Image (cartoon, rainbow, N blue to C red; front, side):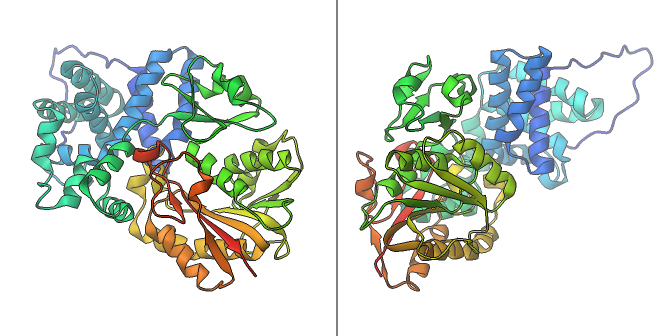
Amino acid sequence: MSEQSPRPRKPGKPYRRPQKDPVRILAFEALRAVDERDAYANLVLPPLLRKAREKGDFDTRDAALATELVYGTLRRQGTYDAIIASCVDRPLREVDPPVLDVLSLGVHQLLGTRIPSHAAVSASVELARVVLGDGRAKFVNAVLRKVARDDLDTWIERVAPPYDDDPEDNLAIVHSHPRWVVSALWDSLGGGRAGIENLLEADNERPEVTLVARPGRSTTEELLREEAALPGRWSPYAVRLSEGGEPGAVAAVKEGRAGVQDEGSQLVALALANAPLDGPDEKWLDGCAGPGGKAALLAAVAAERGAMLLASEKQPHRAGLVAKALAGNPGPYQVIAADGTRPPWRPGSFDRVLMDVPCTGLGALRRRPEARWRRRPEDLESFAPLQRDLLRTALESVRVGGVVGYATCSPHLAETRAVVDDVLKQYPHTELIDARPLLPDVLELGAGPDVQLWPHLHGTDAMYLALIRRTA
């Protein structure tokens, strides 16, 4: 099947103006922003939805459908690409990206939602007429009618190799992850088909919105009075919003007394805050503080203990986000824009140091599904020197007897244990602390002493944490 050029209208044939569908046009615009500008859907979509509401084009159901179309299409992009590729007569890279976005939206409606097939095809063709023109709309119509002949399971059986022939490629297509990501996650899990399938499935599920009640400023009791609120699973400060819950409508969130923060992120901050220390406990450092979620929680806990937090972030605009998150903290704190690899503070200045380093973000694929298609194996090499330098800074910034938390939102072994093992060889006067007891009641934390959280086991992002004490 090939794209068709616009053809002249036959004499006497009436022209029908394409019907504009605000929901699907908005979804298309969001996908184009993700593709053209390397934008993230979670940053692009909210302002588009807000603008549509202000114009009176959208109600709650429209917003929910647009959100499902965008995120569902991005999560299943790998699977849908394989299906579309089998329905066209050219390599997928030769299909214009806007056409591919319309096709992907249509395939998701056909195979990933309860929208009737005829309605999914019709709506997608109308969208194509509006944003692509009549000629390409015919191409979209022909491809989607072919896709509509079978359901998702039948298509997957057709386009994915058998598991026994190529397990990684099978899982990559079935669960819509790049093959190299499947391989890396499998290594991190330690083998076994059930575990990797459960993890990949969890990556494709819509994550819950989790709030954090910042100590001294809000309480879980206050947040639980919200209509859609449920208790958190692990963190004493966490509250989950059930489907349909809107964090922006929560008074404590609007006022900055609470925030949106994954429970895994909360657990990492709290484990560092509760790690046993020798000596004073007065000065804490968050060395990679942007955008401010962990820093706000740490600052609030520090305030309860009479300690202060220094929150450092290299990028000035992200330092501004940290300052906004910490504004109103009940105890002393300071926010600075500084390069963590060239710190302006003296060595040994802090009792506790958190270094949540930049990484590939493979632990947050539920929230940023497009990241899986942007990252490449070579990205690991670009992050590796920075991650090691930042951990060295943390170890030199903590006093003897103090504790460092090395954290990353990636389960990739090259970003977790490999970094810790390499750096600690250069710092013999350190010891790993067993982090597992500092996450009370959290199950399946592995052999320790470090901790790897998982979406399929803990319902959190795949956060990693190693706690290190400086001994001399």
